[in-house]
Image (tube, rainbow, N blue to C red; front, side, top):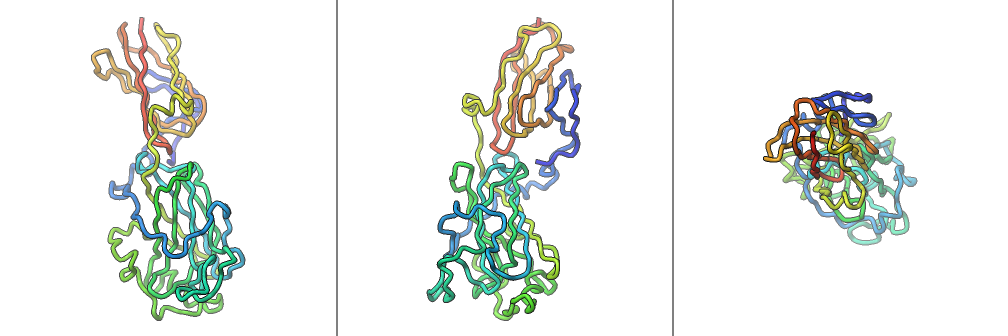
Length: 336
């Protein structure tokens, strides 16, 4: 969830003020500017015959582990479809891919892979997504093997270790693509070239990806290394009202209550969140869209000025959306 403009001081907005660390989003998130089709859960794919045996043992950024080849940075963003496709923080992301010769660590000595690498663990790693849903790995550009296009395997779990998605990442192809250029880089040990290569359109995993949901962006050069960028969308957690009782999130009663001119709504957030506060009269009619913006994690105080509200009983509803999902809670307040 990227924010383009923040006002860190107290903000007056439709009769309300928010004290730091609250922030008001001046424009929508980047996701709001994307077409709806972009917010589509990434395809589920097989983990293949070479998954990592114990992923929790390889929490690391640099996964090269002694393998040589063209330098390669892998940047993967994880977004949660169940939270308006905002970034999913705290997800576990495992990746693995073959080396420049098309071989995997932890396997071998078989008809499927003759080279025996059963005692080593190169090109495998796990990272935890940051507040932007990002994980980054340092690796080498993967080679290829018979019947498969160049690819990376990805397995995503929530923070509790429950599997959310197994998928794969494909690479752009063509005469001047990184795949073609790297596989002709014999000085770096890539000796296969493209003869016998299986292209995405014929690959048994990627051939049905007509929407390009698994296709990454790759930039760079052989001399300076390449960088892969890819976004994966998952059905992540959707928080419910139980989260309030667990004290992860706290919407406390406004004070003073009843009030005559000004009241304060305390709000505690575990994560940076999009927050909406609306006020309703006892008939259920919305009388004020009081606040619609973003807040930092931590203690926040929303100051509500009475404005044009008549004396009476009202409900204020606070809606929250963040990397853990979307939820809401309402409380009663009385204006004297």
